[in-house]
Every structure is written in C-alpha cells, then in structure tokens.
Image (cartoon, rainbow, N blue to C red; front, side, top):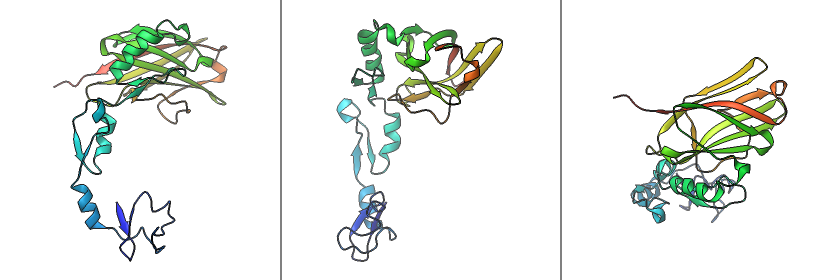
Length: 229
C-alpha cells in the first residue's frame, strides 16, 4: 500500500511506522490517506522472480510475487553445516552434501526411503542430524532443542514449498522404561534454511524426567502424501 500526505508526497505502508507517520519531505501526517493512483501504477508493473538468475522465468504483478517466492523451485537452500556457506537448489544441495559432508561422522548422514519406519540415534548436544532421502534428492533435518521443560524435537526437509518437491507427513516416537512419547503431523515442514531458534509449534516435547543422558533414540516414519484422483 502507498499513502500520501496533504501535500501529495508519497510513502509506502511499511515505511510509515518507521517514519512515525510523518512525511519525510514536509513532516505532515502520512499513513492515513491511500494513494490509489500510485498503487494502480505499481500493480500494472511486472516483476521478475528474484530467482531469475538461477533459471526461473516467471514474472508477477507488483505485490503478487511473495506468494510465488515461497514455492519457487529455484529458491536457494542453505547447507545445514555450521562450517559451510554453500547455497543452491534443493537437489544441488543434496548433491553437495553427499559429496562434501558424507564422510563427516559428526553429521550422522544416513540414507533412507520414505514410507518406512527407521530408528535414529543422535546426541542432544549435537542439536541436528541430517538424513538423505535418495529417491527424492532431499535432505531431512532432525533437530533437538534443550529447554527448561525438556527437549523439543522437530523434523523438516531442506527445500522450498514447491509442488514439485511433494508433501509429506510424519510420526515421531520416543520410548524409555515403558514410557512412550509420540507426535504426529500431517506435514513435514519445508524450509530453505534450518533455524537455530526453539520452535513454537510442530514439535515433540520429551520431558527431562524421561531423558537418559545425552543420547536420543527415536523412531521416525515419513510418508509422502499422494492425492488419490
């Protein structure tokens, strides 16, 4: 959105709060009267996808490009290794990780196939474990975050939310001394970069009372969601 002051000076909607709703040209109030004329001009302008240099050929009218950016198959994904600054498409990242980091025991890289249970072991102090989905050329990140109430465990694919990537659901299960903690989600979150922030949603919480040292052994079930037509 664009706004104008009484003198006709313009300011975009995101800038108005930063300017304390004062026009930068004349200090009159700005942020209340929309500039429909400027918005109409901008809406007629085609904007190329930010990933055009990586091969995307799509263009969008101004203000409509953000929805595509989240699903663009050419979106660049960051290597989850803290000592690597590589970025590339999700398939290129898969190849990079396989070639560059497969011999690094710290990252516990394993291959697995979707629609199968597998048991995974990781150290809570490692914080992240990477697994490779060979047939999909995807990297799966299993992360854990130690907090005062327990350990949060999340699962995500390092990939854009593009339809070509596919959609997946998953189940986590943790068993110790006859106690079981499970978590099911209809969607494996897809991210272009893994976060180091403690998740606010979509996680399994393991209370401290059920932890046995630094080692976590969990069962993971990943399945691709296929529409039945």
